[in-house]
Image (cartoon, rainbow, N blue to C red):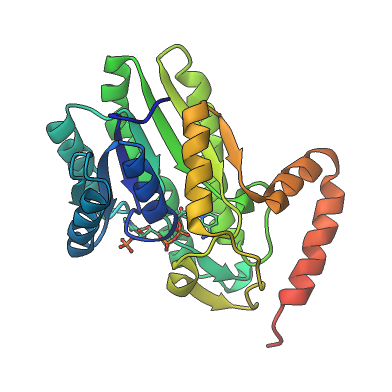
Amino acid sequence: MKLDGKRVLVTGASSGIGLALARVLAARGAVLAISSRGAERLEQLSEELASACPGIRKPLPVACDVADGESVRHLIGACVETFGTLDALINNAGICVYGSVEKTPVADFRSLLDVNFLGPVQAMLEVLPFMKRQGHGLIVNVSSVAAIHGVPYLGAYGASKAALVALSQSMRVELAGSGVRVMLVYPDYTESAIFENETKVGGARRPEGPYAPTADVAEAIVRAIEAGKRDLILGARGKTLAFLDGIAPALVENAMRKIAAELREEE
Ligand SMILES: NC(=O)c1ccc[n+]([C@@H]2O[C@H](COP(=O)([O-])OP(=O)(O)OC[C@H]3O[C@@H](n4cnc5c(N)ncnc54)[C@H](OP(=O)(O)O)[C@@H]3O)[C@@H](O)[C@H]2O)c1
């Protein structure tokens, strides 16, 4: 997919991977809509992108809480009203909860599902009629390496991201022949605000890293979009995990058990 002139919505564009994606997409000449919850930050970002890439149409900033169905409906409606349609929707907005499953309150599971799963679901349901009518469209769902195999202390988070994987795989085959494609992205640890903003429920400390730069992750995602890939697993660790999980899941579980023991905090 050539991105020059393509109408692309990025959710979670105010920070981290989404912000880096907005920068790379703007540099490629995409017609952008950028979204997250804070209207003021989005206005600033729109100005910043327009002055960094003078040839592009000024990105459309639309504040939206993806956990709120009405807000998502308004977001897609604003994009369609302004651009006529969308060529690509990048469901990137996300939150994290860190800690052992047994310490995670049900309310935190709900928040994760509302933002990381139901947010993308709602956006896809809103955008699909337009994409199907025009006979083409790309939906990019940002999952996580933690959805490939359960990672210690990311159980609730990984579950919300694994739900997105299963749904995306079902949609791919259901949408075959419609011209609408679904791509899955599995980032590994990436430098971003997600770790400061996450809810910590106790039981463990965070691993030391390494953490990939957001600019590298965004460039890899955009290249995968251009190349028409179905899946993008980021980082050597993520790729190794996916490979070993396919051929030797017991080995992976053993490695995860060691990581769990290393990170566990005494009560
Ligand atoms: N960083 C990693 O190591 C890593 C690894 C695997 C997967 N991922 C995934 O990558 C995606 C981007 O994360 P990131 O690391 O770049 O995190 P980040 O820097 O914290 O960015 C998260 C973005 O999502 C937005 N957001 C959060 N809650 C929202 C809500 N309810 N409605 C609308 N927007 C909301 C935030 O904007 P506002 O707060 O301004 O609304 C922000 O723009 C997420 O889906 C995350 O799960 C990240």
